[in-house]
Length: 231
Image (tube, rainbow, N blue to C red; front, side, top):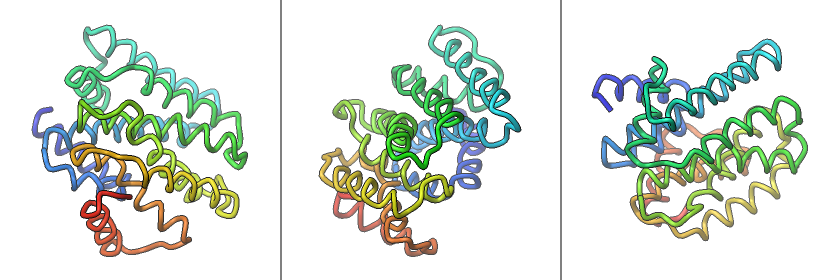
């Protein structure tokens, strides 16, 4: 990814997704970090498509636009002129990423238009489809030899935390789901290279405890997670 484009994406994620931006600081390789940020930016665009639309139909239209962008990306030809679509295309092609998890992220947002996330089964399905898929893709970018599904449990935990933060899933109902997801994520073995893909789950521990820590506490928690190799 060109330097200016990478800087733009870095600034975007720092502004709209500061927690995950913070976890990306633990990706040592600048090129790999830029590619992971392209995935995070794609996730942001899908969430934004649902949040800013005034009606479910308009949200569907926005999400369909991204499905068409995936068609172009995986067709191997020209991609529509949109900075995040272009960055995503470069990341997909550079790492030979599969389409299925990217498609699942769209499907998860479409399902959220019709199903309340206060339903536990729906919350788990959304967390797996959206954030679980994203964490798996990030792990693959960081370590091409990562085990299939690496990072999925951490992604699920982070997805549940996001639902709690958004007020879509009450903490009292999310607590057993989030605790179980974090337990699974802690037991998952990730390579040193792939580990930053799971780091957002470390911050989900604060949500489980119903805490809103400052930046310094978050940084310290992430440093300890990296040192121990466990979220």
